[in-house]
Length: 256
Image (cartoon, rainbow, N blue to C red; front, side, top):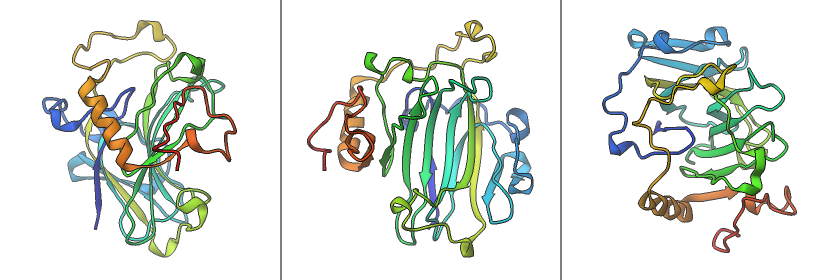
């Protein structure tokens, strides 16, 4: 069965059923997005309204940036990662920010998982991964200092071979007998404050329809989801961090 997942990614997560995107225009690929590399691994479909990006043995993956609906590869996908993320590494090579959604493939009969990660101000030595059946929230604290993303970013998507860790810590690797692994992106939407990354102080703040926080009810729903579906959190990974990063508030319900 194909997996079909809608995602919204920014500084916060929102429930799609609230209609936030209902009145926003859907763009064609060429209207708002760029094919950065990958040559034949990107195919534009249906009058420019959808694209396929694929992973095979011969060519590297393409890299493009947009909001989209995502349809993930099916069947045996162990070791395959479809990434949907924000980054400013092109303009801040030494101290970039990054917000990641990584969809982790699996062996036949097992579901895709979502892994999230956050880097701020070049803090790539501290991975803040959390793995779910779905969703994540990382709360900013003063103790994180500059490790929280704060600079303008672009939005990217790619598909890649991460056999070393994506499925059971590398136990199951990409099997190219099942290639090409094809992920479909459609319903492209761009909505937010535009900014020249070289002049972030001139960011357009005129879009009032974008919430700047989540409600108490949404927070309760998030915690309820978290208690049911979390599969891994960096806060409890003693092999990586003898002392958890400063923003971690440990809960015995998740410790095991």
